[in-house]
Amino acid sequence: MSADSVQSKVALAILNALEIAEKTGLINCQIPEQIILDRPKNRDHGDYATSIALTLAKAANLQPRVIAEVIIKTLNENNLLVPAGISKVEIAGPGFINITLESASQGSVVIEILTAGKKYGQGQSLAGKKINLEFVSANPTGPIHLGHTRWAAVGDSLGRVLSAAGAQVSREFYINDRGNQMDLFGQSLRAAALGIDRPENGYHGEYIADLANAITKKNPEFTKLDEESGMVAFREAGYKLQLDLQREVLENFGTHFDTWFSERSLYENNFFNHTLDKLKSNGHVYEEEGAVWLRTTDFGDDKDRVMIKSDGSFAYFASDSAYYISKRERGFNLCIYMLGADHHGYVGRIKAIAACAGDDPEKDIEALIGQMVKIIEGGQELKLSKRAGTIITLEELVEKVGIDAARYTLIRYPTDTPMVMDVDLLKKNTNDNPVYYVQYAHARICAVLRNAKDLGIDYGLKFYSPELLVHERERELIGLLAEYPRIVAAAAFARQPHRVARYIEDLAAQYHRFYNDCRVLPLGEEKPTKLNSARACLSMATAQVISNGLDLLGVNAPERM
RNA sequence: GCGCCUGUAGCUCAGUCGGAUAGAGCAACUGCCUUCUAAGCAGUAGGUCGCAGGUUCGAUUCCUGCCAGGCGCGCCA
Image 1 (tube, rainbow, N blue to C red):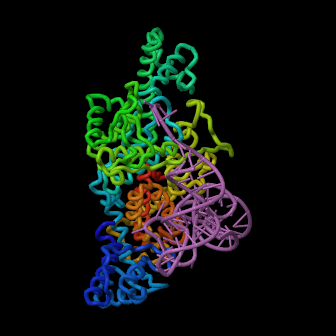
Image 2: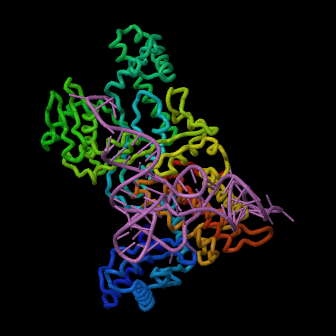
Image 3: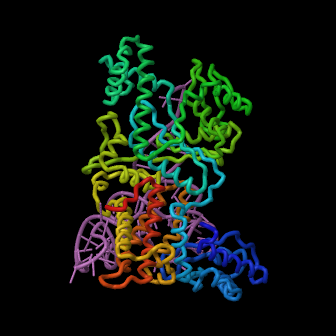
């Protein structure tokens, strides 16, 4: 919320009134730093409401309604209402204070929006946070599947939302490019190339054969290598190809990563030993049964974790530890891990690593858990993917429903809820499909504005008369537009981009209602009036906010549909 | 057994610093286009917010217990 927004003026006026009342002895208690304004659900309760009188009742030892009366009296006597753009203040119910704004004042948000443009909604609530946002992190041994896709959409959107709240965000993809799985991958590729049986616990999707073909085409000599060096040759070539594919698929999906972080790099330049020393110096490392352990039980983990196995090789946990330390040493003061539900057992471990490193896990680490995604088509759950051999891939989903519908649907729900995607519904261009509903509102506004231009109607800031927008629909729409910055800040704070989606759905609905009841353009031979211009400005502002919101989701705002 | 998540309308789900009469879409029924995109709008109907306690002016929201469902508990990655 910008300092000069309508809301903040109102909040400030009430705060001033409270301070005055406290000084003059009308109220005797600690005055809060901020006044929280709600938007009442019921229109009869005004444009804003605050429950401050109820909250203070106990501390002040007064009836809530008495406090409300004091606030209102003080507002009146000190002429605080007019400068704040308030036309009416009322007490309601047990002590709520309901506030109605002057039309001109309320309408000024349109000016704010048109002036700020793409920047409207951005704030500084997370300024100073340097966030490492890690998501997807699929193994480079196969395609991006549906579970990853949820994160590809939500993680990307969260990155945008956090940035909009003023944080400095780096999106990171962790590549698990060492360990058994990689070797199995190499063995599977080699087996496919040679036409021999693949390892039982290896990879069996059709894409393995495709990759193997591509490799042998380029490097036919690989097939002549012995088992070990052949495995390595295929592994490395397959790794590169598969990683490039993942990158390409994600970029096409609109999800960009700033850093692709290789697990192998943790073992270069002595970095792992450096991190081990660091953990040792904090006293949480010990040796037992020939293995090197991190005593994570010091910090609430259920059992200690092995970093170096008794055979001298590194356990996966070694990488986890080093990776965390790398993040911290690269200057991030908040590491967000976006994990699948099947990995939620990691949370305790990761936090224990932070604690062992001397950090505060509650402050420096956050884990977001994404529940499972199911996909149904024709009433049947889709389980098999031709390509991956197991689960539906990102590409298959996009082929079915398109990028916008896929992203929007995945982002629209909180991630801690398991979700079901209905392909048939997402293919429909009706309003059961929220992405079209929102996009349609945007396209509709663009059409109106095109027509306005053709009719020679002047719109834009110079022709905007906020005091003319007094219709109930106009006031509701304007009120909702003013909410947007708070929604973005709240979404960032809660790490919940779905709030932005839900908000623009509301906004689209509100615009449609306005459109239905308030004619924007002159009818027939009527002469354009200032009201036409004002409504065109309001429409323009709405389109801007829808577009800004969709942008935070990584979804297009089409001008025509 | 322990840990995490979920339980809101017939269906899919919003509602999270505790607020006024619990919301939306779909499905059912009824209206609104000879002028802005009907991919839209208005209305009717639909609820013991899993169950039982507790905290307080007030609980779908916070705490405890229970019931039901999903997932996880390797010197795998």
